[in-house]
Length: 63
Image (cartoon, rainbow, N blue to C red; front, side, top):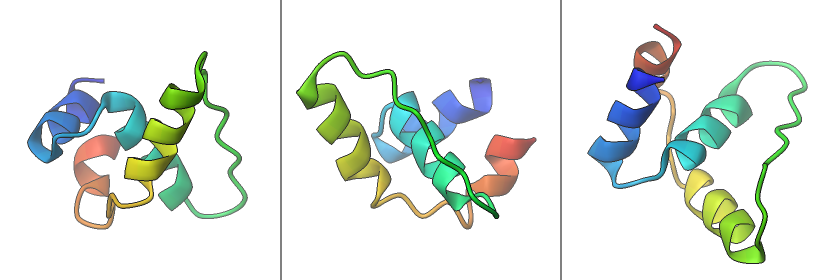
């Protein structure tokens, strides 16, 4: 969790956005389920997460 928070803070994202982007970057079929309770949370998470490139951040998050 610390790694996710560190990546989020470095990129000015939320931990949820980083976690969602990381899940989407995993090989195979992954269907992330977001625990959003408002439309704003849902669109905020998806909107920014689609812009996060996990290629250089994946080793840090999976450590």
